[in-house]
Amino acid sequence: MANTAQLSIDGTTYELPVIEGTEGERAIDIRKLRAETGLVTIDSGYGNTGSCESAITFLNGEKGILHHRGYAIEDLTSHSTFLEVAYLLIYGDLPDEEQSNAFIDDVTRHTLIHENLRQVFLGFPLNAHPMAILSSMVCSLSAFYQDQGNATDSAEMDITIRRLLAKIPTIAAFAYKKSIGQPFVYPDNSLSYSANVLNTLFGVPCEQYEVDPELALALDQLLILHADHEQNCSTSTVRLVGSSRANLFAAVSAAIAALWGPLHGGANQAVLEMLNEIHESGGGAEKYIRMAKDKSSSFRLMGFGHRVYKNFDPRAKIIKKTCDRVLEKLGVDDPLLEIARKLEETALHDDYFVERKLYPNVDFYSGILYRALGIPTEMFTVMFAIGRLPGWIAQWREMINAPDARIGRPRQIYTGETARPFVPLHHRPKSQ
Ligand code: SDX
Image 1: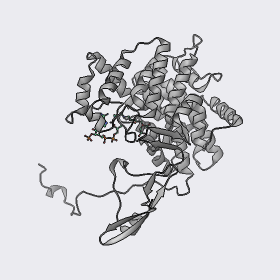
Image 2: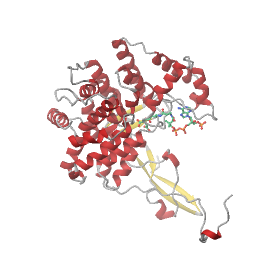
Image 3: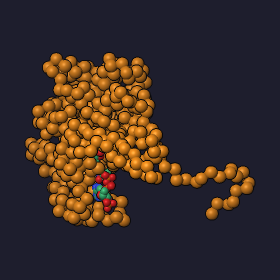
Image 4: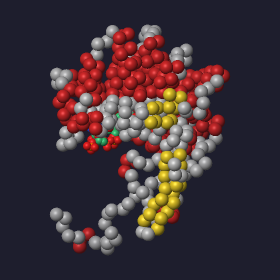
């Protein structure tokens, strides 16, 4: 296949290099386009534009493939743990036993937050959305760890990475406890990462909280499924903010804000709200399918569609199986699960969805599983952030260490007023 592309414009033909990745993806390299032609490209939403070369995650949207550092998501959810996948994403390989033990020990021993940070929680209103608290508190960590500004020092970078992985579940749990007026439950270092998440969310100081290992396993798998997803909106945010050399805490805080949107990570909360609305209106999916197809309606079938997957999101398939297993174990007969199944069945046989290749994505079933684990709807996107954190860190670290690392600064095409003289206030015509 050709390793150059030709661009002919204004009577001149330019040769542009074509680069190819290890999985056969190809890109026209336009890094010298403006210097050679005076033109830029434009691609709102970046559906056709690669922002970087990356060795972390590979997606094949047509075939529904998701690999992390070469390992299939199906294998990682079946045989690995969330902290091991975090290590794989960040450092490039599965850890050996010594590396694994040291990493787990480091993360376990950094779960506490500075006691002064607890005071910050008091300032938030009771009904503050936990994503607002999470984003603010993660950025506040940079005020308590001011020696973490130097991203190039690997020892400093490693302790910052461990602090973030360790403290974000604690901050999340404290935000939840504040919203229900319960005392904060401190992490228990004798528990695994996911067991600790459940312990700090649902434990109370006045009695021993027994973590159900099956539920801890289900949560660990959910976190693995959210760990990274190449250059999605929030990951592109962490790369762009990090490219200005803002510290990692600030870059992750910005990524949390991006994830909050209902078109991105906020979709899992929006799916549950949609399923609840359908349930309360009598359970008829047809009306919502019609609304989703109606161009005059802004309603979208939340949890459906994806910029990259034009086949089933492999994560949705895995979550659906875990959903069935956990709900059966808990003896939960969730009417929303039945509505979700009916919605999926109806949509997958409707031309509108079939033609646009709209399939259930990671968010479609995850909310039902979070609900079965006892996690409240407003915390769903927070759980997504806890899962996505290793991916944000890995992508930020790859960007910072890239040999051609430079500040991200897209171009534009100006479509506003051309040059015009200033008009003093008293000479301006009355606006219509
Ligand atoms: C995540 O990027 C990632 O990797 C994200 C993520 C990750 O792990 O980081 O996978 C996590 O964000 C999953 C997506 C969660 N969001 C939702 O479930 C919200 C509902 N879905 C969408 O709004 C939409 O599908 C997006 C945002 C996910 C993708 O939007 P695109 O790629 O910009 O697609 P589009 O808006 O151009 O839609 C193409 C067509 C349009 O119709 P036409 O104009 O061609 O007639 O499909 C329609 C859209 O109207 N469409 C939908 C729809 N999604 C797309 N119609 C109804 N319901 C939907 N859900």
